[in-house]
Amino acid sequence: KKPDGSMYSISTGKKVYNYLNNFFNFCVERRWINSSPMVGVKLCKTKFSELKDIDSFTKEECEKLIKFSTEKHENGSPVYECGYAIPIMLETGCRCGELLSLKWENVNFEKRQIHIVENITVQKDRSDGGKRKLTSGTPKTKSSRRIIPLTDKAYTYFKLQKEYRYYGEEFYVFNVKD
Image 1 (cartoon, helix red, strand yellow):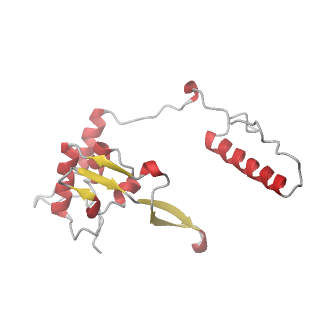
Image 2: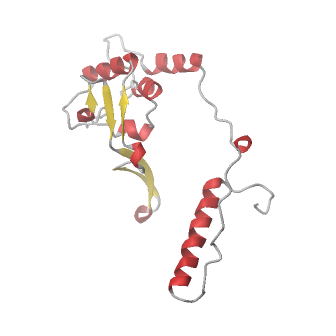
Image 3: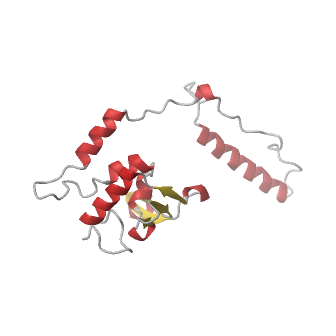
């Protein structure tokens, strides 16, 4: 427990456990201690009743988001350059960073699927006074690299995005040319 009586997050508990475990194993390797006091210590698992409620969009909220994000000008071009990203995320379950790092070469219209092989994250640049910067790399876990089948709606939104902004297979789906 924290001094104020509230509980630490599960993530913090895991980090502390790993740090202590590594530290005591290091001490055993150096023969500073005979055995690690962490032997037999188990992380407590979260009880289902302790899980936080997750707020999700209602069907009506999703419809409003899609309607707003896919608005078009009188000439037929989208009002928002990345507007199709919203309905695609809702249809596929992609994370924002996964979708922003998606290149056309990883969209297979014939098989109606996308390949998630990259992820964009926002990180603090410690060398530049803590400014935030975007970095692209492989997803953190193996299971994050995956193939996602496209629903009819997602397929349509990808087609619309391709009609609007396509510069080549090596470019990002949600690319701003300049």
